Image (cartoon, rainbow, N blue to C red):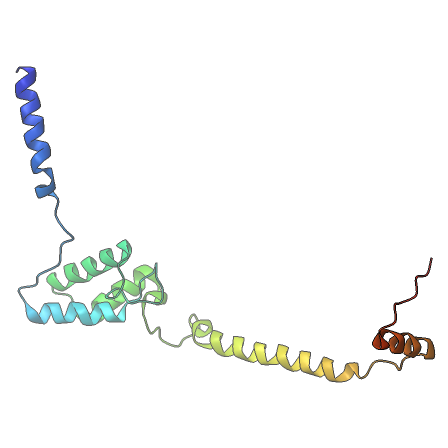
Length: 160
């Protein structure tokens, strides 16, 4: 091939390259029931990257992978309970957006309440300490005289 043909071929490929770029694939389910199940399950599972979003809400790559796993398992004929069991077996109870209350998740459920109680305890301790400090000792005669001179606008004495 000559250089001109190669350049023309390269130019042609470069010109059509933007057309080859695909946007993010949006799953189009032909089965409305399966799509509904996938959305319902995705709303029950937590994004392990974002942690405050379900995999239905998250744009993280891992959330997309988890959504694909849900779709694949629905296509394989698994029930909702089997899919949830698979996810919790693989990722633990933390993958559930509303984890069940049991010994391993008690800290997830009681953590906010414990932090609130600890905050009130610290606040009570600070307030109690402020009350017990009391009033400062009274001023001496020399301190009172110096304060009076300062308030009257006299210059403080320069002491060596």
